[in-house]
Length: 72
Image (cartoon, rainbow, N blue to C red):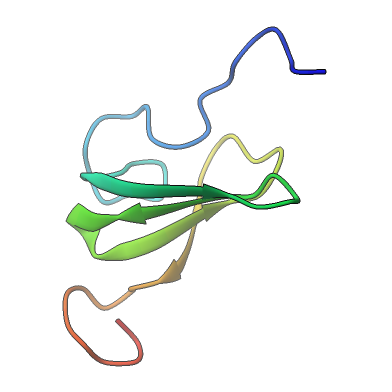
């Protein structure tokens, strides 16, 4: 059964580059564990929010900005 009340878990703090902000999110995926993964296009990163985390996401790819290196 779905919860009656929604909770903002990603973004909601204006556009920006902090771990509680997004900049031009381009894609969204929710896995079987209800982990939310977002392609944050404007910040050149992939963000992840674990189920129950409503404060800050975790950067899982793209910590060095735009580029084609394995660390980007």
